[in-house]
Amino acid sequence: MALGTYAQLKTSIADWLNRSDLTSAIADFIMLAEAEFNRTVRVRQMIVRANATLDSEYTQLPSDFLQMENLVLLTTTPTKLEFLSDEQSDDFYTRYFSAAGTPRYYTIIGDTFKVVPSPGTDTTQVQMTYYGKIAALSDNNTTNWLLTKHPDLYLYGALLQSAPYLQDDSRIPVWNAAYERGIEAMKLEQERANYSGTTPRVRAKPMG
Image (cartoon, rainbow, N blue to C red; front, side, top):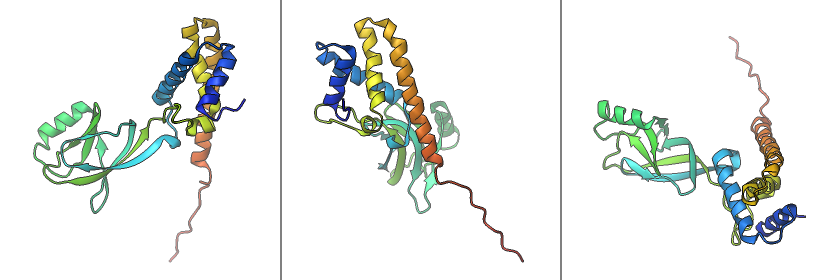
């Protein structure tokens, strides 16, 4: 059976479980699998770039934010901001950067990121490179890149989530093993893509 759409995925899960009475529960299994994906999966298809205006110490993170990769201040010469822990940012702010100035550091606090020092009244653009949440499947959003590229992850991830609901503990090792194989295969594919076409080239140094 094809696994290219949300409806097809739900039908396949019902077939694998040999149940026809789990319509609403299967939607929950898929949602729980997606929550697990967002906690553990980090691949290039999830990387997002977005610009934001920095006009105060705190700036709201995007609604799909999972993990920051890079934060760059878009000044004449773009400058990468250095990450600090929350405790470090408070210490730096108190000891070195109590006055407004050009931001040099950032930290994540709740659903915001904080820069040190505060930009004060100046407005500055920053570019965020971050891992964004995988778009959830629904009747209105019938597919996404993960279902297209790795339908087995969706299938086994949802089946794994079904076992506690069905009180079928004997199937947990089976579904989990298949799910973990899919995760490892995806990581291997990512590594191969990252290093493909990167054969080192030796440049001759001019003599004289």
